[in-house]
Length: 434
Image 1 (cartoon, rainbow, N blue to C red):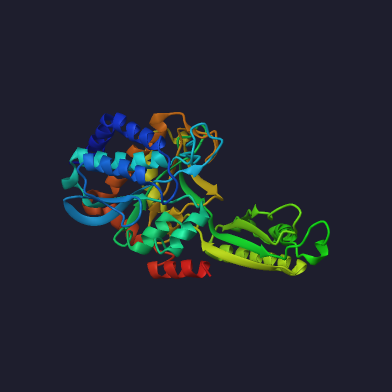
Image 2: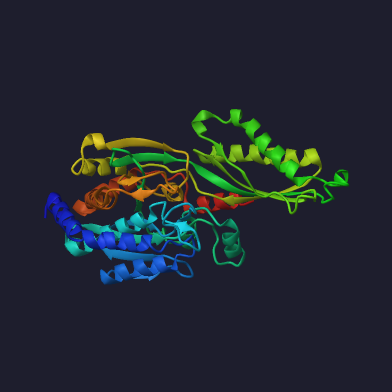
């Protein structure tokens, strides 16, 4: 078959499977779960792949699945990813009454897109025309939340890292993967797709200021006010902001999670959390040193102690020009040129950034949704643009990569120079955790 014939057949299958795709997306939306707790969501995805008769296995002692669909000819392995978890947004009208979880992140859409791509290739019966393997990975815990819960999992030896893709990298799930692909939803206004985005990485921080309690009314001079240390720390961090280079896109946003015990006792136990974000690894390290310096100086100023615990966050999101160009050529067959944005600057973070440092990675954004991510206003407004368009675009891109003995995929792989090898990556995670 000619390549265009394969794409046409796959598009027909996607159109025929439209109602099932939407059904799965909506079913997942109704059962939002937080990271490393996505049992119901895993079951939904597992059943969907079982119905497709695609062999899969659940991640050992972890939520999510890994399913392989092999072409008849050997070749590179392309991973297609979808994220399982939701976020907490109490104000969202569809938030779970008990957990306050809701898919205001669009991860239910990602899973539906992953399923839609799998169904397209399985049902089109084009395995004999392509070379390689598709590896569908449903990944847990992308949202960096509930840090105390994840710390308990780590202390008990159930996980190594707070991020799901980090954990799967450590466990070897990406060892045999040559290229990774996924998508994300975003309110793009009148646009339908955004390609070649860049995003920040970050390190997470837990901070504890330790003072000395005393009666706040009758003997404040006998105490050491840990809350004053925290306030000074925030001011010290603010004084650092003019030292951050614009090109590094540094963002530091601490919050106080515990301000004391009761109002008439000088606060002796005050806690904070923060991210330190930046556009590259060295900028993250540099900014983090300045933040640590600010925290220590604040404690010293009032005579308190401070305990700083760094947690490996996510690496900056990198794009791959070769993959972006292939995706764009397929998008131009589906939408108008004016409906595509090339290049995007995101100071938020994605754990797919870690994957993008190890191998060629494709992470476009698709519209069809309205409202900011993680807010009460986020919702789907156009099923075709939000669900079906990304399935078609990614499936057609995969055809390009695996056609003609996977010549395009091999070119992308050969042209790629990883910023980190797996061993270097794991060493970096250890360094961030000191």
